[in-house]
Length: 240
Image (tube, rainbow, N blue to C red; front, side, top):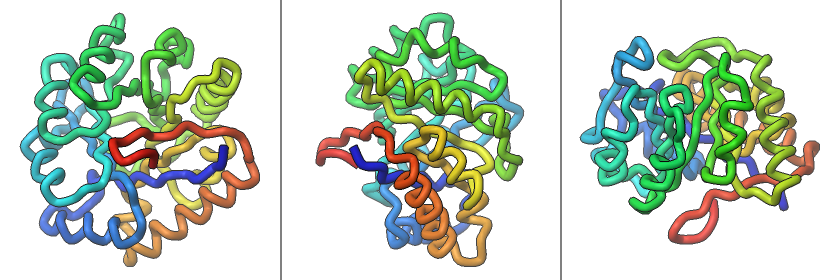
């Protein structure tokens, strides 16, 4: 398999007063997905938005919507976010004793299902469920706020996920979120990431299109050097 790495701009760092314009910039830059962070003020000490905003974004763009639920009761709201347009729903292992029923339900509602683990959560917590997911999201900052510093101690989790995927013939996508910039993007890809979530590095730049391009170039160069297999994101139109 090739190593075409995807950059997922996180709208948490976008200017919501001109959100449609900023999404259009990402489309022009060549983005194929957007990352949407949903926070409830309980699981994380911040509040962002709910299904209505996801629905509005879905009307603005045809990009793949990667919706990250940083909430205490994902099962309660999963269907609402999928109906709003989530192409993939990511839920935290920390709030689920057994995530399999919810993962199956998400897939049954025609959305992809993913698990997220926080920096302090050991990889072993998600390992039994890798065969039940489409995506594993590794947090490289503590969830809840943008602009935090990358935590390199999470990199072995990426390597573990990639190794198990290659050994077991899995197809889950390996994603990372937090503190991604030109330098940390390369590190993440070298350790096994397929998808890089980036917010401040893109939307905080004077030229978001140029910032996206530089980030993608750094990631793709690292992917060429890494040379190992990657996961593929399945869509109705094929693969991303």
